[in-house]
Length: 214
Image 1 (cartoon, helix red, strand yellow):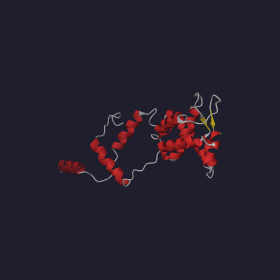
Image 2: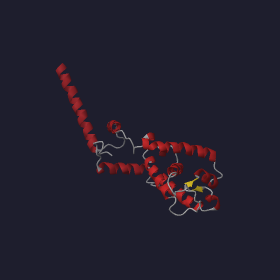
Image 3: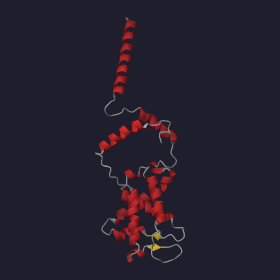
Image 4: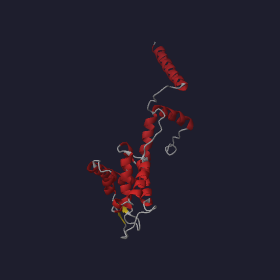
Protein backbone atom coordinates (compact mmCIF):
# COMPACT_ATOMS: atom_id res chain seq x y z
CA UNK A 1 0.00 0.00 0.00
CA UNK A 2 2.75 2.46 0.87
CA UNK A 3 4.56 1.67 -2.38
CA UNK A 4 1.49 2.74 -4.35
CA UNK A 5 1.69 6.10 -2.61
CA UNK A 6 5.40 6.40 -3.43
CA UNK A 7 6.13 6.37 0.30
CA UNK A 8 7.48 2.91 1.15
CA UNK A 9 7.82 2.10 4.83
CA UNK A 10 10.88 0.11 5.87
CA UNK A 11 10.65 -3.00 8.01
CA UNK A 12 12.92 -1.30 10.52
CA UNK A 13 10.18 1.31 11.00
CA UNK A 14 7.26 -1.13 11.03
CA UNK A 15 8.56 -3.56 13.65
CA UNK A 16 9.07 -0.99 16.47
CA UNK A 17 5.62 0.45 15.71
CA UNK A 18 4.07 -3.02 15.93
CA UNK A 19 5.74 -3.59 19.29
CA UNK A 20 4.18 -0.38 20.60
CA UNK A 21 0.76 -1.54 19.36
CA UNK A 22 1.15 -4.97 20.95
CA UNK A 23 2.26 -3.37 24.19
CA UNK A 24 -0.78 -1.11 24.12
CA UNK A 25 -3.14 -4.10 24.00
CA UNK A 26 -1.14 -5.99 26.63
CA UNK A 27 -0.17 -8.58 24.00
CA UNK A 28 -3.75 -9.89 23.92
CA UNK A 29 -4.00 -11.21 20.36
CA UNK A 30 -7.41 -12.86 20.66
CA UNK A 31 -9.33 -11.55 17.66
CA UNK A 32 -13.05 -11.82 16.94
CA UNK A 33 -13.80 -11.40 13.26
CA UNK A 34 -16.65 -12.14 10.81
CA UNK A 35 -14.79 -14.98 9.07
CA UNK A 36 -15.24 -17.23 12.08
CA UNK A 37 -18.89 -16.22 12.38
CA UNK A 38 -19.56 -17.20 8.76
CA UNK A 39 -17.89 -20.57 9.28
CA UNK A 40 -19.66 -21.29 12.58
CA UNK A 41 -23.09 -20.33 11.25
CA UNK A 42 -22.58 -22.42 8.12
CA UNK A 43 -21.59 -25.45 10.19
CA UNK A 44 -24.64 -25.01 12.41
CA UNK A 45 -26.89 -24.61 9.37
CA UNK A 46 -25.47 -27.77 7.81
CA UNK A 47 -26.54 -29.72 10.89
CA UNK A 48 -29.79 -27.95 11.71
CA UNK A 49 -31.21 -28.03 8.18
CA UNK A 50 -31.19 -31.83 8.33
CA UNK A 51 -33.62 -31.81 11.26
CA UNK A 52 -37.40 -31.96 10.84
CA UNK A 53 -37.81 -28.25 11.54
CA UNK A 54 -34.77 -27.34 9.50
CA UNK A 55 -35.96 -29.14 6.37
CA UNK A 56 -38.87 -26.70 6.18
CA UNK A 57 -36.40 -23.83 5.70
CA UNK A 58 -34.81 -25.25 2.55
CA UNK A 59 -36.03 -24.93 -1.02
CA UNK A 60 -34.40 -25.73 -4.37
CA UNK A 61 -34.93 -23.70 -7.58
CA UNK A 62 -35.72 -26.82 -9.60
CA UNK A 63 -38.45 -27.86 -7.17
CA UNK A 64 -36.56 -30.82 -5.78
CA UNK A 65 -37.13 -31.89 -2.23
CA UNK A 66 -34.13 -33.50 -0.64
CA UNK A 67 -31.97 -33.34 2.44
CA UNK A 68 -29.05 -30.93 2.54
CA UNK A 69 -25.73 -32.61 1.83
CA UNK A 70 -22.16 -31.57 2.58
CA UNK A 71 -21.40 -29.30 -0.39
CA UNK A 72 -24.82 -27.67 -0.77
CA UNK A 73 -23.93 -24.71 1.44
CA UNK A 74 -20.45 -24.19 -0.01
CA UNK A 75 -21.50 -21.62 -2.66
CA UNK A 76 -23.23 -19.51 -0.03
CA UNK A 77 -20.32 -19.87 2.40
CA UNK A 78 -17.70 -18.92 -0.21
CA UNK A 79 -19.71 -15.92 -1.40
CA UNK A 80 -20.13 -14.75 2.20
CA UNK A 81 -16.39 -15.00 2.79
CA UNK A 82 -15.78 -12.82 -0.27
CA UNK A 83 -18.18 -10.25 1.13
CA UNK A 84 -16.30 -10.29 4.43
CA UNK A 85 -13.09 -9.58 2.49
CA UNK A 86 -14.63 -6.22 1.61
CA UNK A 87 -16.10 -5.70 5.06
CA UNK A 88 -12.80 -5.87 6.92
CA UNK A 89 -11.36 -2.98 4.88
CA UNK A 90 -14.42 -0.81 5.46
CA UNK A 91 -15.95 1.10 8.38
CA UNK A 92 -18.54 -1.59 9.12
CA UNK A 93 -16.49 -3.61 11.67
CA UNK A 94 -16.48 -0.47 13.81
CA UNK A 95 -20.27 -0.31 13.70
CA UNK A 96 -21.46 -3.91 13.93
CA UNK A 97 -20.51 -7.04 15.85
CA UNK A 98 -18.67 -9.85 13.99
CA UNK A 99 -21.63 -12.23 14.37
CA UNK A 100 -24.03 -9.68 12.89
CA UNK A 101 -21.69 -9.09 9.95
CA UNK A 102 -21.28 -12.82 9.42
CA UNK A 103 -25.04 -13.43 9.43
CA UNK A 104 -25.73 -10.51 7.09
CA UNK A 105 -22.99 -11.68 4.75
CA UNK A 106 -24.68 -15.09 4.57
CA UNK A 107 -28.03 -13.42 3.89
CA UNK A 108 -26.61 -11.42 0.98
CA UNK A 109 -24.70 -14.44 -0.31
CA UNK A 110 -27.87 -16.54 -0.09
CA UNK A 111 -29.69 -14.03 -2.30
CA UNK A 112 -26.91 -14.24 -4.88
CA UNK A 113 -27.42 -18.00 -5.21
CA UNK A 114 -31.12 -17.63 -6.11
CA UNK A 115 -30.65 -18.08 -9.85
CA UNK A 116 -28.21 -20.98 -9.62
CA UNK A 117 -29.43 -24.45 -10.40
CA UNK A 118 -29.37 -27.08 -7.66
CA UNK A 119 -28.16 -24.57 -5.07
CA UNK A 120 -30.56 -24.38 -2.10
CA UNK A 121 -32.25 -21.23 -0.89
CA UNK A 122 -32.26 -20.97 2.89
CA UNK A 123 -34.82 -19.09 4.98
CA UNK A 124 -32.17 -17.55 7.22
CA UNK A 125 -34.59 -15.36 9.14
CA UNK A 126 -36.67 -18.45 9.85
CA UNK A 127 -33.50 -20.15 11.03
CA UNK A 128 -32.84 -17.29 13.45
CA UNK A 129 -36.39 -17.44 14.78
CA UNK A 130 -36.10 -21.15 15.47
CA UNK A 131 -32.58 -21.19 16.85
CA UNK A 132 -32.73 -18.03 18.95
CA UNK A 133 -36.28 -17.91 20.26
CA UNK A 134 -35.46 -15.83 23.33
CA UNK A 135 -33.76 -13.03 21.39
CA UNK A 136 -35.36 -9.75 20.39
CA UNK A 137 -35.80 -10.99 16.83
CA UNK A 138 -37.72 -7.99 15.56
CA UNK A 139 -34.91 -5.63 16.50
CA UNK A 140 -32.28 -8.09 15.26
CA UNK A 141 -34.05 -8.57 11.94
CA UNK A 142 -34.20 -4.82 11.37
CA UNK A 143 -30.52 -4.45 12.20
CA UNK A 144 -29.50 -7.32 9.93
CA UNK A 145 -31.56 -5.95 7.06
CA UNK A 146 -29.92 -2.53 7.38
CA UNK A 147 -26.51 -4.13 7.50
CA UNK A 148 -27.30 -6.32 4.48
CA UNK A 149 -28.16 -3.21 2.47
CA UNK A 150 -24.81 -1.72 3.47
CA UNK A 151 -22.96 -4.87 2.40
CA UNK A 152 -24.51 -4.61 -1.05
CA UNK A 153 -23.00 -1.14 -1.38
CA UNK A 154 -19.42 -2.21 -0.65
CA UNK A 155 -18.56 -3.09 -4.29
CA UNK A 156 -19.36 0.53 -5.12
CA UNK A 157 -16.78 1.72 -2.62
CA UNK A 158 -19.34 2.81 -0.04
CA UNK A 159 -18.79 2.80 3.73
CA UNK A 160 -15.06 3.32 3.35
CA UNK A 161 -14.42 0.04 1.51
CA UNK A 162 -10.82 0.21 0.29
CA UNK A 163 -11.12 -2.73 -2.12
CA UNK A 164 -13.17 -0.80 -4.68
CA UNK A 165 -12.97 2.64 -6.29
CA UNK A 166 -10.15 3.79 -4.05
CA UNK A 167 -9.20 7.43 -4.65
CA UNK A 168 -5.41 7.36 -4.68
CA UNK A 169 -5.13 11.15 -4.92
CA UNK A 170 -7.14 11.58 -1.76
CA UNK A 171 -5.19 8.81 -0.06
CA UNK A 172 -1.87 10.44 -0.96
CA UNK A 173 -3.14 13.77 0.33
CA UNK A 174 -4.10 12.19 3.66
CA UNK A 175 -0.74 10.45 3.83
CA UNK A 176 1.11 13.74 3.35
CA UNK A 177 -0.89 15.35 6.12
CA UNK A 178 -0.24 12.45 8.46
CA UNK A 179 3.50 12.69 7.83
CA UNK A 180 3.40 16.21 9.26
CA UNK A 181 1.66 15.09 12.43
CA UNK A 182 3.87 15.12 15.51
CA UNK A 183 4.90 11.61 16.54
CA UNK A 184 3.87 10.89 20.12
CA UNK A 185 6.15 8.96 22.39
CA UNK A 186 9.80 8.98 23.30
CA UNK A 187 11.97 10.87 20.84
CA UNK A 188 15.03 9.15 19.47
CA UNK A 189 18.55 10.54 19.86
CA UNK A 190 18.54 11.55 16.20
CA UNK A 191 15.36 13.56 16.66
CA UNK A 192 16.81 15.30 19.70
CA UNK A 193 19.98 16.13 17.79
CA UNK A 194 17.98 17.60 14.91
CA UNK A 195 15.99 19.78 17.29
CA UNK A 196 19.18 21.06 18.90
CA UNK A 197 20.63 21.98 15.50
CA UNK A 198 17.44 23.80 14.52
CA UNK A 199 17.42 25.76 17.76
CA UNK A 200 21.08 26.62 17.39
CA UNK A 201 20.55 27.76 13.80
CA UNK A 202 17.60 29.88 14.89
CA UNK A 203 19.64 31.44 17.71
CA UNK A 204 22.55 32.16 15.37
CA UNK A 205 20.17 33.81 12.94
CA UNK A 206 18.73 36.02 15.65
CA UNK A 207 22.23 37.02 16.82
CA UNK A 208 23.29 38.00 13.30
CA UNK A 209 20.17 40.13 12.89
CA UNK A 210 20.90 41.95 16.15
CA UNK A 211 24.49 42.63 15.09
CA UNK A 212 23.33 44.13 11.80
CA UNK A 213 20.87 46.41 13.58
CA UNK A 214 23.53 47.59 16.01
